[in-house]
Amino acid sequence: MNVLGIETSCDETAASVVQDGTTLLSNQVFSSMNLHAQFGGVVPEIAARSHLEVIETVIEAALEEAKFNWSDVDAIAVTQGAGLGGSLLIGVITAATLAIIKDKPLYSVNHVIGHVYANMIKTSPLNNYIFNSNQIEFPLLAIIVSGGHTQLAIFYDDLNYQLLGKTLDDAVGEVFDKVAKIIGLPYPGGPQIAHLAEDGDPNFYQLPQARLDNKYDFSFSGPKTAVLRLAQKEIGKDYNFPSFELKKYLNKTQKANIAASFQYVVVKTIVSKVKMAYNDFQPKSILLAGGVAANQELRRQLLEIIPAKQLFYPDIKLCTDNGAMIAARGFYQIKNNLKPVDPYQIDILPNLKM
Ligand code: KG4
Ligand code: ZN
Image (cartoon, rainbow, N blue to C red):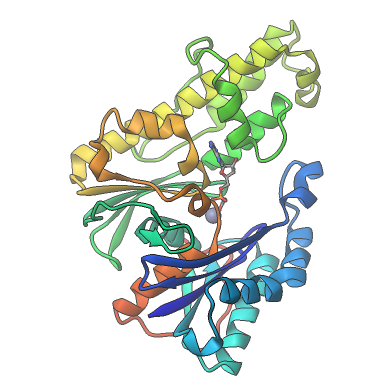
């Protein structure tokens, strides 16, 4: 069963072909990131226009890379939500149109669950690479950490899952991006902070962790504001000093110590919740998902509490937004006998929850 996955929820226009939910036959991703860099975040109108310009080319390239004709495609899966309205619309309209004219069943996928299912992709003939060889088993604990999402969920099987906790304010990737901006690192800030943190001392600044009613929820506004305040203090200014000026006055060592201390506390917070969920639900597998899954400090701290054979994370290319994760999730929906959607009726769901 070959599924073409199409993803356009944010700033990546992506299409992939995945066989049986596990084998990556192609993976095409076009990012409009450079168009947003000067604004310090994704501009929805610019993202939507970029999707419109490239989506046909990206899909054609995905089929070509897989050496596929349309007759080889068994189904189309598309991100229906959550995401930016204009961006989702381009992907959904394109997928629905193709489903109609090529006569293929169409499946709608929840973007966040798609991130989790990136872990199901095991191999790819594209580079003869085995992404992971251990068996993923239910119940599984999913740690979804991306630019738009921070969720902890337990999956009893493909269709039955329970959301344990979520962020009450910023998503973890978002807060990496915001702190990066304060210390003058370009967008997206996550990888930049991780890189700079290598030169810093993670214990140099003590940043706060939030205490919340639901022990599985997250809040990252505390450490973010704490970074702002300590940066102002470090350069001898008070809380009125504008955040966008700080980067000019902080030296390299201060920035590195901020990056390291911030990353350390955010990762520690995530890992402490995972540890509780691990004890409470005894999942057989733990799956990292989303762009922040690429963070090495997160993997390192998780491996201190979880045996390596139980921890899964996608190949780096499949951590950030891609079409393969949507194709993989689509396959498991088909496998579980979920019905295709009507391409004449499908609508976008920008606020889709888990
Ligand atoms: O999954 P993704 O592409 O976006 C959403 O679907 O929301 O993830 C992008 C996010 C950005 O916020 C980026 O800063 C963050 O993932 N990120 C990282 C790392 N690589 C990407 N954050 C921390 N450490 C990294 N190594
Ligand atoms: Zn995403």
